[in-house]
Length: 334
View 1 (cartoon, rainbow, N blue to C red):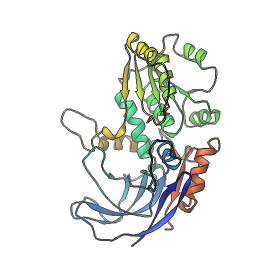
View 2: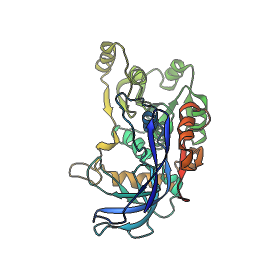
View 3: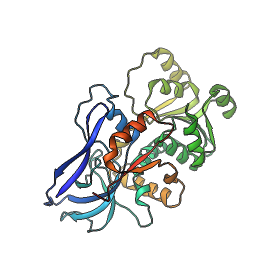
View 4: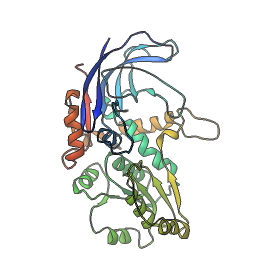
């Protein structure tokens, strides 16, 4: 069977490639016809433009797809026509499977009533929810989310739904405007120090979140966090940074801060003894947020495009951030 897939072949170089996929399946595999897939701007741009040192090409990007089951292996609890979310790279046809490992392939059936385009954002929502779940949240906590890219906006909205007073921070005014359009009550892109003091009555934030992966921003999260506060590292640091670590460690020590890494792929797929956290549980929570429009993903999506325009998609996300924040590929004609 013929399949098309997005391939990164060099810095800023991407195109559609073609391959043949056998319809023969192992018992734990499914064959999925992709309908839509979302570009994860942070992770994929780091690969498309080699922002992380030591990166090698070629590579197949993507992990946010929705499609329909074409065929299922004997051990799989799916039937032909089921709509599923799966974390495979961008491709028109995918042979994929589930795994109970914390970093394995994932296929989860979507509930009726969930828009398949919205559902492409489920993996980004799972990342955002991981940052929220790790924090000890109290009603009325003052929380700051640094970086209002896709994941930052989602994180801020979920913290707000949890009863926090949330301030979203981003130097790009259009990102602040988008966050407000999606329902975030408070944002700022300038004069931050005065705003921080006023927002927290001079006490510092109870929770700060880095959703950028920039070490300088992590340092700022630590600096503006109040005594006994929590600093959530949600972004993935990728670039070198020079600074005075002693002053940073001193702030952590003197303010009794908790620094929490929030890498999503440490969460088990199924619940395990001693923990209520699992990808399956979090997936259901995110589905419900989509269904009741607590998070209106359609307001986040800038464009729905043909995958053959993948190179322009990455260029726009990298160099035209004020024009587009989120792009979805439409695979239905492939």
